[in-house]
Image (cartoon, rainbow, N blue to C red; front, side, top):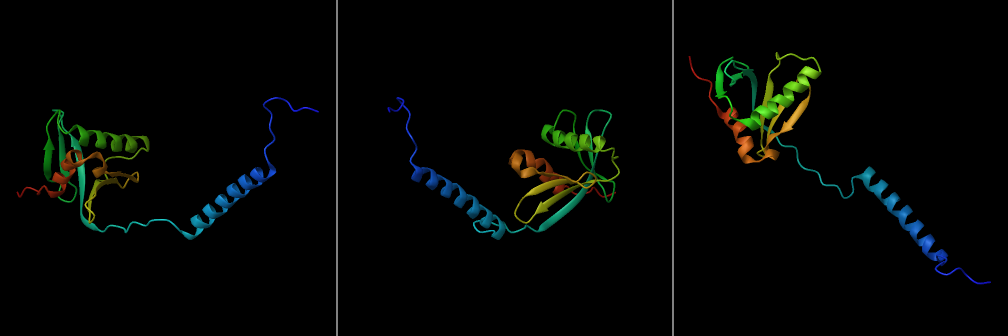
Length: 152
């Protein structure tokens, strides 16, 4: 009997070795996952400052940013400016509309001890880490955190 040209049997040892490798890797991955071996844990950052804000569309196309506690305007975005902030707020507002929430509950701007800045919508549970969009974009929200409420 002659073998077909180009046909070779795979040695039994190679098949057994491959099966042992796959099974061993699967077992080790399962053990590591259950015991946290090889995982890195980042310490949780503490809150440095929190500010609850409301964003109100103005008739001229601008946006008034109000301190939720006092109702005072802390900043105004002129029409056609702050495209990043408007985009973030549009996304959060769209989520509120989709879930049939109103504008009663303010958004929460948080400055964390590790330098991060986040914007949360307590109504929907949405969370946006602002620093991932770069320092120029997150600077708009940093300014909102430090903007003083005008005295009457």
